[in-house]
Length: 89
Image (cartoon, rainbow, N blue to C red):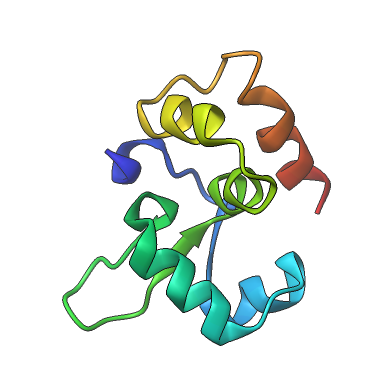
């Protein structure tokens, strides 16, 4: 489902996410391993692309917003602030 909701500008590679989210690469890889809804790996063994809104939701522990986002509810009041925050980055 994440392939359907990721829009250009909302996803980045892990190395780029390190600077934007202020977390170490190792931690972001662990987050993705523990919560695959944070991104996608389009080609097996290829570059992992992380969703910035999903990372922000996960970072603050908002599991409900993450679930809604993953289901495609981009206009939900719990999801909109995270998408707006990404647009400001």
